[in-house]
Amino acid sequence: MIDIVIFGYGYYGTILAKRIKDDPRYNLIGFADNSKYKQGNYTYGHKIMSIKEVSDIKGVSVIIASIQHYNEIIKECIEYNVRIEGVFLDNRIKKYPWATFEKLDLSKDITLYAGDINDDVHLNNDNLFGLSITQNDDKHIAHDVTKPYPLPNACIASYESECVFELIGEENVLPALNEIYRILRPGGKLRLSVPDYYSPFLKNRAMTDKNGKILYDAGETYAIKYGKTGLIGGSIWYTNYDVLKEKIEKTKFKYVDWLCYHSMDGILHKKEIDLSKGYLHRVNNESSKDVYCIVVDLYKDKYE
Image (cartoon, rainbow, N blue to C red):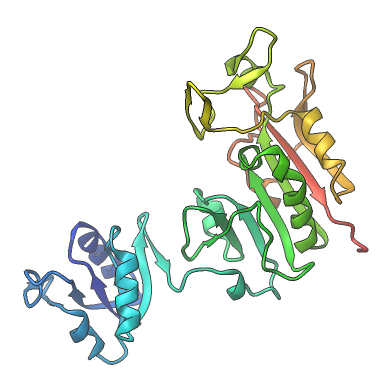
């Protein structure tokens, strides 16, 4: 059992105190806060301390419960040589130190996931890490997927991407896919999913010019607005089977399994998808109604 001081006596600190009370891993021994008004007073029967007082306690760890100032508190704890157990964010204790490429145990079957993780299936996979431009924590490595990975060749077991590649720009797709190919182990798989603008659902929803060219999709998850100068946020290119197939054929991937897509005539082509080998939010094996995503598995040559 780890002796814990909660750093931050505020709303989230009280929620964390209740959580820790029922967690057999932790023993709450006090609070810390940078507010002079709070220091020296008591809550839950424990003293609210300064960081200096916490540093004088042997074997103690802190869990930071300040969503606005946790980066500053991390620096403060490092300065005072206070061990950080984690940061309470998004209603869970995110273990510290944060994930980095250097800390990956490449002897394990590591999966990289493009984008932010927002589901329990991926969060509960100890060998899966998200690649994010907005987050860096125990489950997210700060990385732009259009940039090279600081990893050796053939070191990653699998890679997943759902509704990310339509946001990175067509000119970045080919080098990004080939970089994933480089880091995959022989026989490794990339499960790629993007919006399907041959699907009747998206085709009808999108805004087009008089010739049918898609200009904007207001219902797209990341769409912000369409201003006088054009699209601001949202899909940069509008993916369909033919466009994506042409791009994949130019990559190093030669073994391709098309699991779900519409052809140009709007006909759905769909196989049973094993979600245990790459979970997807937007795919339902039980129904073909309103299917609007392409799903394709790309495999690295087993003998490379």
